[in-house]
Length: 136
Image (cartoon, rainbow, N blue to C red; front, side, top):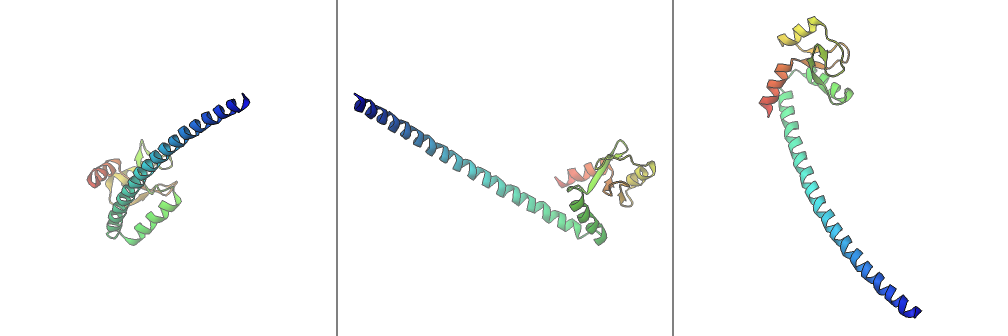
């Protein structure tokens, strides 16, 4: 009786093993499919990022060298936010209140204006929105 019970238990375990193996194979196939999809998406995003880098570099060649260098320094120092807009008389980069004189200078758009607190380049919100629409 014990031997028969052990043999039946062995057969049950073999069936469980076959089931688990088939489930693992299905999961491995699904994982491989998802990895392929993710790798393709990563490649697409990297290609898109390269297009934007190329556009940025082309535009940077048209700007004064000191401004490009300042922009690059701000990118490194300020968590990849070098150019910000002012909203409700505050810098959107650091939240510091902007003086009325700076707001006038920003709206005139005739020179580069930096936040007195964080040093980020401030631009007029309308100008930023129009440039965003143009680049899309």
